Structure formats: C-alpha cells, structure tokens
Amino acid sequence: MSRHRTRWIALTIAVVLVAFGVVLAVQHRSEASVPRLVQEHKPVPAFDLTTLDAKTISSHALTGKTYVVNFWNSWCIPCQQEEPALQTFYAAHRSEPDFTMIGIVRDDSSGPIRSYVAANAITWPVALDPSGSAELGFGTTGQPETYVISPTGVAACGGLGPVTDADLEAWLAVARGGGVCG
Amino acid sequence: MKRAWVPWLALAAVLLIAVAVLVARSGPSHTPAARAARLESQLACPVCTGESVADSNASASRAIRDDIVKRIKAGQGDAEIRDAYVATYGEHVLLTPSNGGIGVVAWGLPVVALVIGAAGIVLALRRWSRTPRLAATADDADVVSRERRRPEGESR
Picture: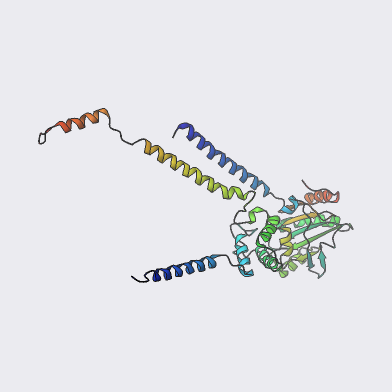
C-alpha cells in the first residue's frame, strides 16, 4: 500500500470523525436550559385542568392574557428554592387584569401538594395533572419548568430549573410586548 | 426405481410450507396492543437516562403510554405517533435513530466504517500476496546448489 493511499484513508477517517463530533456538538447545544416549546416559540398546547379549589382552568380561557405556567411538585428541592421568587413575582402582578399565574403539578399527588400549598401560603391557582396530559403537551423534562405565554398563546419565554424574580419580570415584559426571548 | 421422487417432493413441500409459516409469523404484529408495546420500546423516557418509555415508571412515561393508546385508537399510524413525540421532545426521544436528518449519520457511520475496514483488509491482502515474506538471496541459492552437488553420504 503506498504511503499516498494510506494518507487518503487516514484523511477520510479523520473527516468522518470530525463530522461526527460536529454533529454531537450541535446536538448537545440544542439541549439547553430552555424548554423546547420556548426554543421553537410554539403555540401553548391546549390544557384543561382542575385546580385544588375545584375550579376549571384552561388554555382557551386564558387567551388574551399574559400568563405564567410553572410545573412543580412538593418533593422537588429546586421548586422549593424558587418558591420565594414566585411569591414575590405573583404579589407584584396578581392584581393586573391581563395577568395570571398557574402552578401545574407533575409527578405528585393531591395530599402532599395540599399540605405544601397550605404550609407555604401559595395563593396562585395550583392544578393537578393526573393524566399527565399538560406535562406531555408542554414536553416537560423535569421540574421546575416555567413558561411565560404571550396574549396570542405563544410560549414566549421560559426556562428549566429554578427561576428568579428578575427572570420572571424580564420574561413578562418581553411577552407583554409581543416579543419572544432569543 | 419407481416414483423415487415422491418422498423428495413431499419433503420439499413440507419445507416450503414451514418456510412460508415462519416468514408469515416472523412479521411484526399489527394488533393495537402489539403496536403500543413496540412504540413504547422505541421511545426514550424523556426524563430518565437510558430507559425506554416501556421500562420507565416516570410520570412522563406513564403519560406517553396512555397517549400512545389514545393515538392508536384515534387511527394514527406508527410513524405519525413517533413524529408527534419528536416534535414535542426532539429527535433524542427515539431510541432507534430516524431514517432522515441526524439519523442518517447514526445509520451511515457504521456502514462507512465497514466499507473503510473492508477496503483496508482487501488492500492489505493484495499487498501481502504480491510481496512474499521470504525471498531467497544469492547466498541462499549458492548454499542450495552446493548441497545438491555434494555426493550422497559425504559429511560436511
């Protein structure tokens, strides 16, 4: 085998390996801390849930409002860590007519959730998702996950993991302005 | 020998029927339960590491299992159902890569490696067959011809 041919084979293998590496790198980048629904600014999936105080809350009824959807549960430590930020944020905006915030429970049951809500004086609507339909529609991959939905029903901003009050304020401003987070 | 071919014909018929039955039975089942089980095993649990939806007891996997049944009842095809989950969770929800996009790399890379490996083996074998490992030198030829000329029984 000539040295020339060996070089070509080595070069081909190197090109294939580099291409594979680039593909893996691009794949990894898409798994960011932003939910896929927000990355692609898709319309919010339809949901129809019952809150702990037996009221119905649906995506259809919320059209025209800017609203926050927070997936959480009682045993998740990051959810507990972000709860003070949610309290501050909700207290600042709860009286605004074009605003609402809902907590959707994923992977938890009614008893622990009711205890947690009572113990922490959570006043925003909290809905159970026993069939997992909302979890599936949003494509959640864990908790907490937070989405800010624009008045037109688009997932404008959001993030995986605990959010801060500053995050929520910034996202709300963007969504209200008809924009989306980059 | 009269009609000696009859047993052979019978044997051939039995073999043919056996092969036909095997082929028919080895195809995938299309019952709703079988389709659901197949789809569950083809999808990765979106919140786990290395577990399929079929194996996982995470709430997301339970929701997907219920959703698959609903979609099958609604008349959706397997590809349509898989595409719906890819749209929600991304390509990595498929445990087996798709035939398009990024999946081409996953399917194609082993083939490329196989072709390169096979080509390398062929080239190596051709090279080895062309150049013998040992070749007689002029000194070797001298020794052989001296030994041939030596009368039998004469010591060295």
